[in-house]
Length: 332
Image (cartoon, rainbow, N blue to C red; front, top):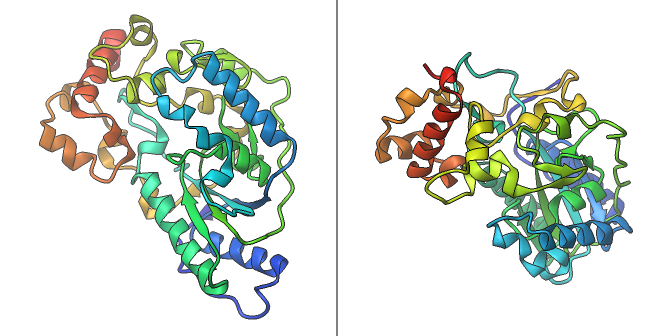
């Protein structure tokens, strides 16, 4: 099964103002925009939301957020602070798995950064969906949220039935794996919720064992201080810690190791044909010898409209040099 180009939403005919009918129509519109899976959660959710919130508190108290102070935004604990009067939440998944691989011997960029900035893609489509909802229910309130918003996004996606939070901290769908970007449309419309997802990791510990830095300190707990993705994207220091340099291998922008080894990603998976998620040519054939010669203007051109712009030009050079130091054979 393959996902194609998103279609334009088409307003349904009939009694869409009844909660059940509106829920069905809203999910159909979301799928027409390229989202799959989609699901609804009715506030306040079930008992797992307080448990996920308590887990966030423990994670913060342990300092696992490293320098990401925004993770401690108090609005993350209370969804009603993001939209007064919110009653329901539509969670959407955007498949970013593309059935291709980087060239042998090239440096590695996390798959989420291969195409256009997913924040813009998801936010733009959710806003179209919100305007459609407002046309059906004049006066309804809504807010589009991507992971840059202070929302307990994976917990609410789990509540809405999109998948369960795995031991590596990623949301996992039983037929689509974890190559799924998520977004949410909060609304004051009172819509029925779908069944929440149940965890299916079982006794598997492949992600924990495969992490080269031991960042998954225990099941379901990822310590950013030891995570290659954090250090290559968020760390603003002039140099990376020696332990990261020694372990980073070819990874210069994010890291997919814990997803690559997940059994749920070993099954045949749908490959996205969404034009906005296709990889840029240089991403699949990246070599330090070439990329270290990029000027700031080159960086600006290649990363225009990319989520990887968070990695500033000097950080790219730092990461490239670190990858060379840690694995010189990767880029002779």
